[in-house]
Length: 516
Picture 1 (cartoon, rainbow, N blue to C red):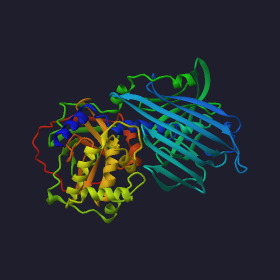
Picture 2: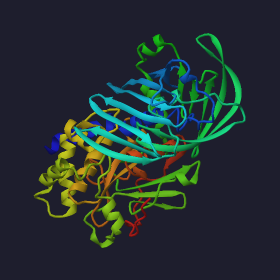
Picture 3: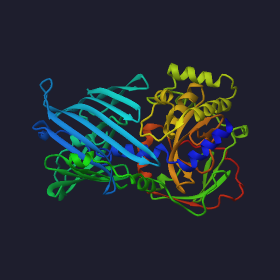
Picture 4: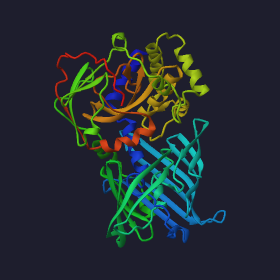
């Protein structure tokens, strides 16, 4: 068993390190492109929408760079009144598909919604499928609250989100293309909207900059260029007089373009993934780091100082150099206590980490029945999960129940299921997103792993097979699926230099614990 696991670990970490955070980041970027990073819907101002007057049939190509198409979005809107309200119905089909080191990564979103011209989104139902990983969300928006049911892993989870009285549909692989108005240069708009692909609401600033003529299939189209700023990220979109998205650009090389149905449905090019991986990974200077080392020294720089990695008992900063150490989970001399709020938060369930579900709880109990200490329980869960869950690239938004049923996935699937099982066993556990070194790419790629509290937070990676995470893992963010969009500002903003990964460690593991 040990020998087979070691072989699997080498294959995964050296040849197949492209973790699902990179793939899923692409999904989140595209899913929220036309809202969070491109163009938000507008607050109704008494101007009739073109979609309530005539049907629209929109085809959008999803590109990495100008030529590398990786998918499409097909949106159809139909004028439809309900309960004496003017509005329109919308249907969407969106697909992503591209090769990734011999695997074909696929994602599909289908669904429908109805939006009132006065109050915006009223009803919606969307299904996501990623190579068999399925999820469905359906609900209503009324009285300033979105009430919805999430179906995943054969279970239903109900939730609610507060929103403004007027809220429109957003994100979701280009869903807001059915909600964007034609603005006038000089105009500025703020608006709340709901993205069903991440079950989140957002707010951004929308500014109409100028008129511009662009070419679509050889014909000129008059547009207004709109800039949207969400946090530190500003993106641009070209909107026609008919309220259609003609083009959208992000700072990260992601582009949406209006194309013909024939173009959208034609096969994609097979070498697209390589450029995507290179663009999202971080190339380090200096000698290649040693993943087997106990201490690593990295000079990490950021365009925005707020993006520098947090400090904790594993990674500390001295001047501009981070010292990252492999932890000793059995060292009790540096133990700390969690606050009551932290202790409760990190054993609780959420929408995707269903730690309190009877199926999760029962299975976790069976895994740890022969273990005594929290660390021994964590290792029992780690051993089963690393061996049982097939290492596979998927474009899914995972839930613990779904992963337990499928037993396959990438780093997100491993991290979500590990968190659920460990929390069910009474171990405070959190999900961590950051960068991990790839020998194959010779770069740092985005990755997800876990931290368990065993008197102190200890990093553990059931995807790469690291019972105690080595120093080539750099933590950036603590949090689950809802935190993935926080990766946006990091892309292209970090610099890493390996200072000296073989230097002796004169600074033992820190005693303080800083939780970001």
